[in-house]
Image: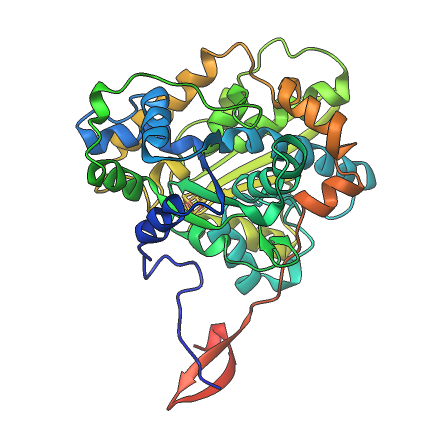
Amino acid sequence: GQCIAVCPTGALTEVNNIPTVWNALNQKEKTVAVQVAPAVRVALGEEFGLEPGTITTGKMVSALKALGFKYVFDTNFSADLTILEEASEFLHRLKKGKNLPILTSCCPAWINFVEKNYPEFLNLPSSCKSPQEMFGAIAKNYFAPKVINIKPKDMYIVSVMPCVAKKYECSRTELGQEEVLDVDVSITTRELAKMIKEAGIDFLTLDEKDFDNPLGKSSGAADIFGTTGGVLEAALRTAYEWVTDKELADVNFTQVRGMEGIKEASIDIDGTIVNVCIASSLGNARKVMDEVKNGNSKYHIIEVMACPGGCIAGAGQPYHHGDYDVVKKRALGLYNIDRNKKLRKSHENPAIVALYDEFLGEPHGKVAHKFLHTHYFDKSLVYNVNNGECTCIKESDA
Ligand code: SF4
């Protein structure tokens, strides 16, 4: 056979997916829906001359409708769903004292890094699919058959992501049901901006529109997924209230915010001290994982995002040219969206509550596992192309 050298995260060769999306929008056989990640809404405006951090959610939804998407949905919806699954998985592991620290699993570049560099710890990442993938699974296996009465294979899911690695993630064949992948194609924030320009849409004069429902409803906890520390803060809001059965006096876990590469905090949940760590960049993740490997880690939860600062600084966003003021402004945009929402905890999202009632049953239950969870692979052995011959080598030797 022939070996083709490819970048495993998609980060080295950025595939242009715009033609694929135009093709999908131009055919009649499939119902085409789009989902948009939280980080996109505070950066897209930069491509049209707006300040970094400007919240363009309403105009973005209008633009997506004008491009021809039948349903414009929100990855935030499935970010809330991720929290319910991940918080229950964490509490389950904590109770048993097993498979700790739990590692977040939203970032495909990070998951790929664990699979290649720490194959002995494949029991540690949360088994939760990322919000992008959970979204596709629910859109195709719940919304399609139960809400609009079509087959999962007749629904086509496009995602708009701040990320280049998400393109690779949606091609992982275990992320789907039989032959039907959860997500069909992923484009970046920059690609969406190009499509809007190609279509001749005047972005700045668009009216503000709302996401379609029910997969467009979300809490503020979902918005902050786009920034370093946000996934952990969202999970803490839910885990705290589930364990204590008390309402959080203050949902802002400011200890886990900010742009430092490694942050840590200890949170008292009814007498149980939970030690949390947030690493952004893979270099920082390696430092934290080496402590786990040496047995010197005190953490119960570790959040990792491969991009320094989190998804707001993703490789698919408008270029920030290393200017971290831009990244901070985007983070502020997300925290402002969260602060101004009434609904700020994932477990209080009524659309998520209804989804469990009608379809999923319990968080971490059987149906949830079938559609929302995944497994990981030892990728420490990779193929090396050597004079046209494939030789299997340890990556560390490469
Ligand atoms: Fe993608 Fe970066 Fe976000 Fe990871 S942190 S999901 S690589 S944008």
